[in-house]
Length: 99
Image (cartoon, rainbow, N blue to C red):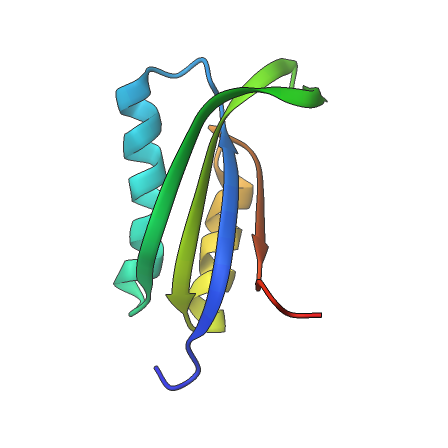
Protein backbone atom coordinates (compact mmCIF):
# COMPACT_ATOMS: atom_id res chain seq x y z
CA UNK A 1 0.00 0.00 0.00
CA UNK A 2 2.93 2.34 -0.55
CA UNK A 3 1.19 4.08 -3.43
CA UNK A 4 -1.88 5.31 -1.52
CA UNK A 5 -3.26 8.60 -2.71
CA UNK A 6 -6.00 10.99 -1.66
CA UNK A 7 -9.15 10.89 -3.81
CA UNK A 8 -12.55 12.52 -3.62
CA UNK A 9 -15.59 10.67 -4.90
CA UNK A 10 -18.90 12.32 -5.68
CA UNK A 11 -21.81 10.11 -6.59
CA UNK A 12 -25.40 10.84 -7.45
CA UNK A 13 -27.76 8.01 -6.56
CA UNK A 14 -31.28 7.49 -7.92
CA UNK A 15 -33.55 9.43 -5.50
CA UNK A 16 -36.52 7.11 -6.13
CA UNK A 17 -34.91 4.54 -3.83
CA UNK A 18 -35.80 4.51 -0.14
CA UNK A 19 -33.34 6.26 2.18
CA UNK A 20 -32.19 2.96 3.71
CA UNK A 21 -31.50 1.52 0.25
CA UNK A 22 -29.51 4.61 -0.74
CA UNK A 23 -27.37 4.38 2.42
CA UNK A 24 -26.77 0.66 1.84
CA UNK A 25 -25.76 1.26 -1.78
CA UNK A 26 -23.29 4.00 -0.81
CA UNK A 27 -21.72 1.79 1.88
CA UNK A 28 -21.53 -1.14 -0.52
CA UNK A 29 -19.51 0.94 -2.99
CA UNK A 30 -17.23 2.37 -0.31
CA UNK A 31 -16.57 -1.17 0.94
CA UNK A 32 -14.89 -1.88 -2.41
CA UNK A 33 -12.16 0.56 -1.41
CA UNK A 34 -11.95 -0.81 2.14
CA UNK A 35 -11.65 -4.43 0.93
CA UNK A 36 -8.66 -3.43 -1.20
CA UNK A 37 -6.75 -1.86 1.68
CA UNK A 38 -8.00 1.71 1.31
CA UNK A 39 -9.63 3.98 3.86
CA UNK A 40 -12.75 6.09 3.67
CA UNK A 41 -11.84 9.09 5.82
CA UNK A 42 -15.04 11.11 5.48
CA UNK A 43 -18.50 10.81 3.91
CA UNK A 44 -20.77 13.82 3.44
CA UNK A 45 -24.39 13.07 2.63
CA UNK A 46 -25.71 16.13 0.82
CA UNK A 47 -29.12 14.52 0.37
CA UNK A 48 -31.62 15.07 -2.41
CA UNK A 49 -30.88 18.00 -4.68
CA UNK A 50 -32.13 19.26 -7.97
CA UNK A 51 -29.95 18.31 -10.94
CA UNK A 52 -28.62 21.03 -13.25
CA UNK A 53 -30.11 19.10 -16.17
CA UNK A 54 -32.18 15.97 -16.62
CA UNK A 55 -30.21 12.71 -16.46
CA UNK A 56 -31.76 9.30 -17.03
CA UNK A 57 -35.22 10.94 -16.90
CA UNK A 58 -34.54 12.32 -13.40
CA UNK A 59 -34.65 15.94 -12.24
CA UNK A 60 -33.13 15.31 -8.82
CA UNK A 61 -30.60 12.98 -7.26
CA UNK A 62 -29.18 11.95 -3.89
CA UNK A 63 -25.66 13.38 -3.58
CA UNK A 64 -22.87 11.89 -1.49
CA UNK A 65 -19.20 12.94 -1.34
CA UNK A 66 -16.45 10.76 0.16
CA UNK A 67 -12.76 11.32 0.86
CA UNK A 68 -10.69 8.22 0.16
CA UNK A 69 -7.12 7.10 0.79
CA UNK A 70 -6.41 4.26 -1.63
CA UNK A 71 -4.08 2.96 -4.27
CA UNK A 72 -4.97 3.56 -7.94
CA UNK A 73 -6.00 -0.07 -8.53
CA UNK A 74 -8.66 0.10 -5.80
CA UNK A 75 -10.05 3.33 -7.26
CA UNK A 76 -10.05 1.83 -10.77
CA UNK A 77 -12.14 -1.10 -9.48
CA UNK A 78 -14.50 1.30 -7.68
CA UNK A 79 -15.01 3.27 -10.89
CA UNK A 80 -15.63 0.08 -12.88
CA UNK A 81 -18.34 -1.01 -10.43
CA UNK A 82 -19.94 2.46 -10.32
CA UNK A 83 -20.15 2.57 -14.13
CA UNK A 84 -22.12 -0.70 -14.07
CA UNK A 85 -24.38 0.21 -11.13
CA UNK A 86 -28.00 0.84 -12.08
CA UNK A 87 -28.78 2.98 -9.02
CA UNK A 88 -25.86 5.37 -9.62
CA UNK A 89 -26.96 8.18 -11.92
CA UNK A 90 -23.49 9.78 -12.19
CA UNK A 91 -20.14 9.66 -10.39
CA UNK A 92 -16.80 11.43 -10.51
CA UNK A 93 -13.48 10.63 -8.84
CA UNK A 94 -10.85 13.36 -8.58
CA UNK A 95 -7.51 13.86 -6.88
CA UNK A 96 -7.93 17.18 -5.02
CA UNK A 97 -5.09 19.64 -5.32
CA UNK A 98 -3.70 18.09 -8.51
CA UNK A 99 -3.22 20.66 -11.27
